[in-house]
Length: 100
Image (cartoon, rainbow, N blue to C red; front, side, top):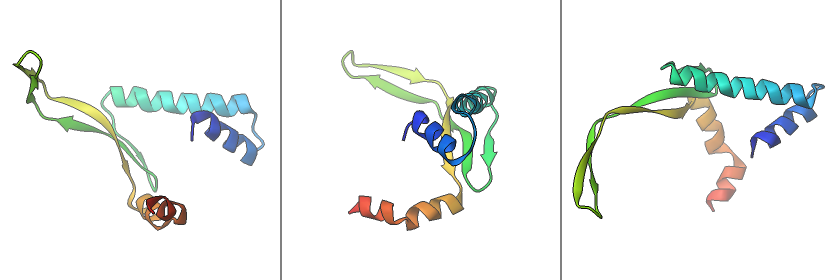
């Protein structure tokens, strides 16, 4: 599903204008990005959390040049789904069919 598909779903289920829905989703996603860049985690009860995960410093190898380089510790964005959300997905018939 794409962002455009989500916009169309919201428009079809509400009486809102398509441009208003599109702008709202764009602002929402922009705020998520801005807050993550500022080092803030974002929590949505019943849905999940957008968190910053720390990656430790490590030594990597460039195989073609046979050299080692240090990758400094850094943070990456990660989505952690809520337990209730994960349970719904696990029990979903559509997901069970995909597994087969």
